Length: 370
Image (cartoon, rainbow, N blue to C red; front, side):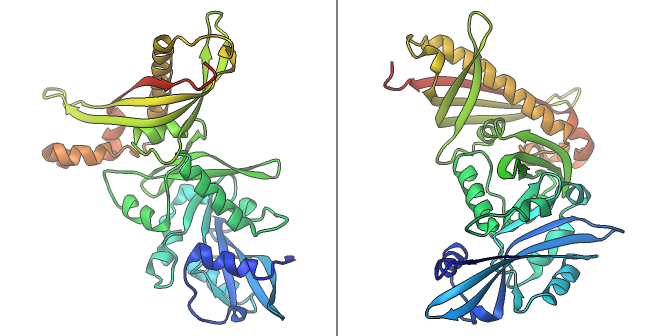
């Protein structure tokens, strides 16, 4: 258990991040700000919560007790009831910002873990859902000197969303997507390295089950472009070969995306081809190797186009290995070829789709250095 005096700061954080308070006394509540689920023993689920208990010390000051509580059960509801018996205040999950699901239990399916949240009238449907590398409890039990770790994770996820590294994934958004036969989900993947947490990439699902395959945080921005999800920022780090076949680092900032997708079906073979053509405008953020040289824009446009197209092909290959249709190809087929959609077994036929991504780059700014 970890204690710290946050004065009114903790109260302000709770209110700002989770909306208006329900007028009940804070002192009577145990506020859950983070939850994790992992595979337990003998077929049980290990549930862990991070509880923030505010104790009124008088004089306008509160002592915040950030406590980690664990329990095993056969369902999320059973775990919640057990943990509620371990806290001095009424357990309140309506302000939980983060739900972390460990890899092993995610492979068995996440719908049973999230189902109680959808049924509850007090559930916070904007809670972020992430996959924790290894176990979820290892992520949630990370200690911080100041603010509770769940708030730190939330800020980390928000930053990755703004940088177009990951999509916004909440309890609310997952439910509709998991029940769509023409689309699969991807969930932010977080790992702990040398005691530090980081958004490591995206985890791919087939239906409600984690496939076990991911892409890195370096590849994820390219997938976000393929999905036409350009947020406030999209920075991509690349390695460009020079005339001596040496790799040189180059950073680009994507400012604009034009995307065209098309599904075609061969009348004879019934083979499905899904084409994605992207035209992107970029600024060069960093290119140290050419700090004293003029950049051949046309040549670099071609190099970047070829490199990004190759990486996009590798990403779509991983998607098909995962049997994860995050590109919503099935939804496109259902809309444009309804008769074909009724005949296909998408669980089997998706892997046979020819996915052809092409990215064309146009550099519009090289910076003031040149």
